[in-house]
Amino acid sequence: MSSDPPADTKSAASSGKSRLQTFGSRLLSTVVLWAVVVLAFVLDSHLLLFGLIATVSLLGVIEYFQLLKRATGSRRYICQTVAVSICYLGYLFCHRDGASPEVLAAADGLAIAALIILLMLTRLGSALEGRKSLDEIMRALFGFIYIVLLFGFVAKILCLPLLSEDGVSVSAWYVLFLVIVTKLTDTGAYCVGSLIGKHKCIPHISPGKTWEGLAGGLLFAFIGSFACRYLFPDQLAALGSTAWLLGITFSIAVAAIVGDLSESILKRTLEIKDSGQVMPGIGGVLDLIDSLLFTAPVLYFYLIILD
Image 1 (tube, rainbow, N blue to C red):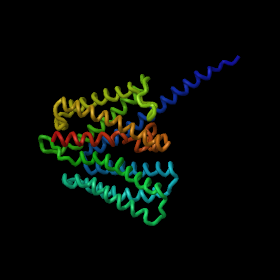
Image 2: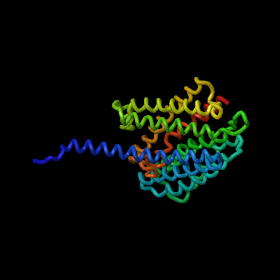
Image 3: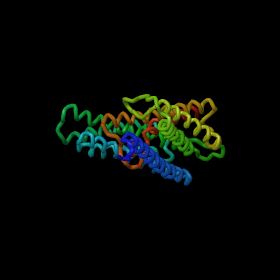
Image 4: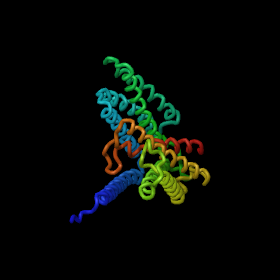
C-alpha cells in the first residue's frame, strides 16, 4: 500500500511553501529598498534624493512602454519612449534645487504641451493606421501623466520651503513620512490579507484584495504616521494638529490602496501579471511605486493648504 500523502495535502503544502517563499522574497526586497531610502536620507543630500527620484521615474517610463510593446507587439513605442524621456528630462530640470513656485506650477503644463508636439512629430514619418495611431498617442500621453507627473509630486514636496525653527530645510522628512505611511499601508494590507483575509472586496480587479487586508493597511498607516509624529515632532511640525494628522493619514492610506488597485487595472487590461522582475517578491518598478503615484499628490496638497 502506498504511503504517499493525498494529492490535496501535497497541494496545500506546496501552496504554503510558495506563499512563504514569496513573503521571504518580498521581505528581502523591502529591506533593500528601505536601506537605499535611508542611505539617501542619512546623507542629507537633496541632489541624491532627486537622483533617486529621477532614476525611478525613468525606469518606470521605460518599463511602461515595454509593457505596451509586449502587449501589442508594436515597435513604435520605442520612438515614443524617446519622446517621453526627452520631455521628462526637461520636466526634471524644472524641479532642481531652488526652483521657484511659479516654475513648479508651470512645469506640468509645459511638459504635457511639449510631449504632445513631440508625439505628433513621431507620426509624421509613417503611414496612419486609423484609430490605432490615436490610441498609441493617447497611451504614451497617459504613461507620462501616470508615471512622470504623479511621481513628480515627490520632487515637488522636496522643493517646498519647509523649514525647522532653526531655519534648516526639513522637506526631506516629509518625503520620508510619505514613503513610510504609504509602504506601511501596502505592508499592512498584504500581511493582514494574507493571514486572515477572507472577504474579497474587488475580485474583478484584484482577486487577492480583501476587506480585512484594507483594514490592516489603514491600521498600519495610522501606527506609522503617529510614530513618525511622536519621534520627529520638530521636523514634521507642518503636519498640523492631531485632527489634521488623522485626515492626512487616512487620505494617504486610501490613496495608496487606490493606487495599488489602479496598477492592477493596467496589468489586467494588458493581461500581464507583473510589470517586471526588478525586485523579487514585489515585481517591477511600477509594482514598487504604484501607491506612491497617488499618495504623493495628496500629501503635497495637504502641505500647501497647511502652509
